[in-house]
Amino acid sequence: MTPLQALPIDQLRERSSTKWRTYGPDVIPMFVAETDFPLAPAITQRLARAVALGDTGYTPPDPGIRDAFATFARRRFGWAVDPARVRSTVDVMMGVVEILRRVTKPGDRVIVTPPVYPPFYDCVPEADAVVERVPLRDTGDRWELDLAGIEAALADGARAVLLCNPHNPTGTAHSRESLAELAHIAAAHDAVVVSDEIHAPLTHRDATFTPFLAASDEAAQVGYAVTSASKAYNLAGLKCALMITASEETTRVVRDMPAEVEWRTGLFGALAGVAAFSQESDAWLDAELAALDANRRLLADLLAEHVPGARFRIPDAGFLAWVDLSALGWGDNPATKILREAKVALHFGPHFGDEGKGHVRVNFGCDPDLLREAVARIGALAAS
Image (tube, rainbow, N blue to C red; front, top):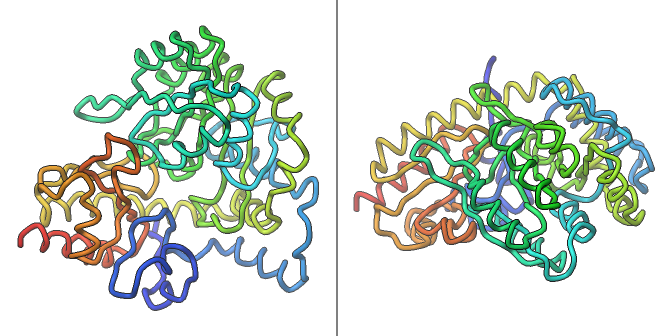
């Protein structure tokens, strides 16, 4: 498979999104989770047609996204999703908030597994719940869920687990066995699991993505999945996410949400999502995966060459790298020094939790030469 080519830097700097408008032209932006690739042709064609038609009105009750995702899930993951158990909303974090509002009471504790996507720390209190931290376990070879810690927290009264699968920022695709055990623990304590699966389409070929709801019969009973095409296909600004269930009770919870929850779905997000999840876009996705596979390995080589004090594990999924720079002595938040002195913008490690001190998150969804330049700049800083 020929890897997908990133757009030229001069075109990227014409973009008006967060990645390309937060810093000046002297900074290489590798912080926020946007990729530098052209859109899949099917998406471009569908959106262009909508613009030509003036098709910019309200999102209809069934824009086709439910069936499109169900077909995609079966084709790419071997996961049987009932379209009748899928409901859309504006984005993944709002889907998480709306579910947590209905499965927890004010003051209930919700488990998160740091280091983890920073908005998790905001969406739990937005649902009037309280964050309970149970960090991932570092085995020395990979990260995994601390199932004993999660069980202890649930036994002590926590009511839900907010899962990140695949995990952001480590890129870990949790095993079927660990997800099934998580479901068993949750069921034993009458708790629920809400699984953010937005990075699932970007699981690399040497790893396996297991949808939480498909991990076991118990997972189907206690779980909710929330996902979107936005990360894999770079559609975050178009606003469409999916809430998926697999049991009568969980389906009732989502179905009973106010109509406004679904009304928030962006029409262009739904149209683009249908095109993204179509078989027509599979070759584009495979080419993107080939590019990201090459870049994740290139990043490992570049860090070993230019920043030998860095510690990095090649991720199972996605285009985000979790890099430990503690050995360089650049403090708890090394991204600030890197931004100031090397002019490379990385995501601040401490934003992912205390476990992120001394770390940075690197977005490698870019041209390999841009990645080379960024790491060379950081390496020159380390050598100075």
